[in-house]
Image 1 (cartoon, rainbow, N blue to C red):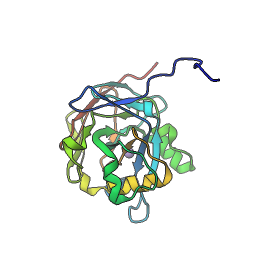
Image 2 (cartoon, rainbow, N blue to C red):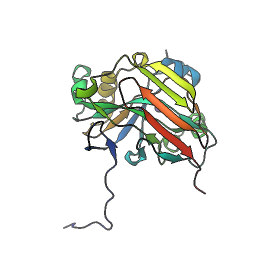
Image 3 (tube, rainbow, N blue to C red):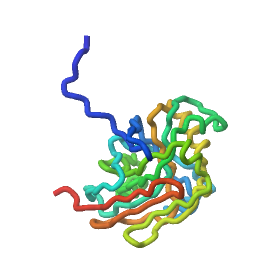
Image 4 (cartoon, rainbow, N blue to C red):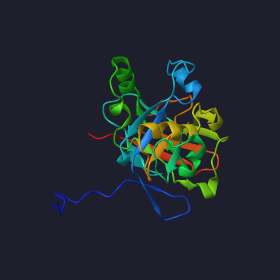
Length: 234
Ligand code: MN
């Protein structure tokens, strides 16, 4: 009985795949917070007492590599957070950690752009993080490398520079929750689906971006992500 749409549904958000013209159709973007001890400390937390947490960004917050990203409204403190992104190829609920890697399609470099002032205010008031994390263009990411291309990176340098200055420089081996542990834990809260992306958390060294900055971010073995911050909307 329901036939047509009131308006044409927009195409699904997608991410590029390294070495291919195929697109990875994106279902949801999950994110892990507080997953590197030194970052928990720089945010004023205690990694021995606080477990990592989950939050989401809308799928259409994805921005491809090489983009100009307008400085977002409602912030004077836009921050960069370089992260390993996991792309899910097989869904499931209550996935065992031992089986979790069989659900992974591949990996990419992402930047969990954050309106830090709004996040600080939300934390203080016990309010949701949505406006600080889930805004337009908040999820720039480079192409996904398949597991066949890159394996499962566990000991690799993760870094980010702003213009020519290194701001973040750490190693994936410092993750508090490993990729299998993240998938196992996340799948107890949500039924994961093919097309989900998981931003796995940022190391220390997060900091502000301003108009004109060029952000370059990498994880050894994966495509480098680069984007620029340009003037915001009028
Ligand atoms: Mn993050």
